[in-house]
Image (cartoon, rainbow, N blue to C red; front, side, top):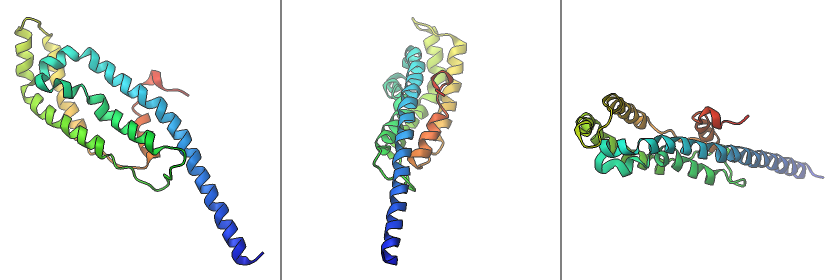
Length: 179
C-alpha cells in the first residue's frame, strides 16, 4: 500500500469517526430535547391557563397574542431544534439562527409595550367592574409584565443545536427533570 493510500484511509477513518460522534451526539441531545420541550411548554401553558381571565382584563385586544407566549419563548426554539437534531445532520461548528423565535418575541414585546403603561389603569377598572380582581394580584401582575418585558428584551443568542438544547434544559421545572 502506498503512502498516499494509507493517508487517504486514515483521513476517511477519522472523518467517519467524527461523523459518528456527530450523529451519536445528535441522537442523545435530540432525546433530551424531546423530554425537555414538552415539560417547558406545559409549565408555561399551565401558568397562562390559570392567568387567562386576568390576561383578558389586563391585555384587552392583545390577550390572544400574549397567550402565544409559551410558543414564542420556548416552542419555536424547540421545533427548530427538533429539526436541527436529526441524526444525520452535521452540527459540529454549525450555528442555528433563531429568526422565527426572534420575530414572535418582537410581537410580544410590542404587545407588552402597549400593556405595561395601561396595566394599572386596566387593573383598577377591573377591580371596580362586575367581575373584580384582587388589587395585590393586579399590582403584582403589572410588575411581572415589566419583568417579562425586560426578559424578552434580552438578546436571543444563536448557537449550536447542542448548546441551545443545554440552555433549554436549565429552564426545566424540577419535577420534570429526569436523572
